[in-house]
Length: 261
Image 1 (spheres, rainbow, N blue to C red):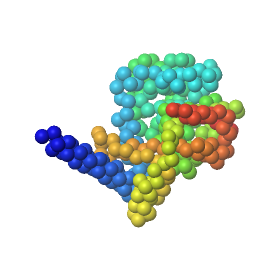
Image 2: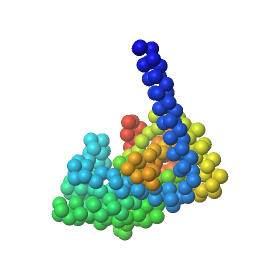
Image 3: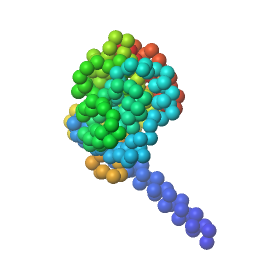
Image 4: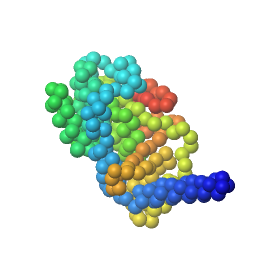
């Protein structure tokens, strides 16, 4: 009796693994059919639904953020928070007394952040758009790329353009703070090769790169979770290409870097 149960389990669990691999491969193939603007729209839909409960919005800074900001930020800093979303770290920084403006690609997230700020009688300039295309008016002492959002920008060339845009609005001695996900192992070449092949065949205008990781968002089939995981030296190369100097860089479970013009 036990033998057939073990055989059934082995067969079904093996089938589940095959189906899971096929599902992930299909997602990488599907991403290759998108043009750059459609890819950005699919990524934006992911952030439309992210962190929308009061508990999440008011959860405050994560321990690594709090320790880093306490060491790096100055009391009079005017901060641009890129990827401010619905306001988790924006509200926390405002309540610590900093002047903060926020930017996010998701208009829905910005509208919710605005309502929460009004409810808590806090004030911040809020703007919608991608940092590689739009920078809020004024100058900033510190620009923070919130919670890994630098790695959520597809393509190295686009990330470098985002850094160039940010560099233009830094005050003398201004800093750029980036938290990111370090790659734990060499990136898998096969999924990206699939995406590149499909992108070439469909004449897409975006180029998938080693280190890109794609995943589904179950709530919305038109959304796409995108993340770039950084190999040793990769972030430093992008900073230099943007005309910036890396003055601090630590790779751990969470990578952190500070850049200056």
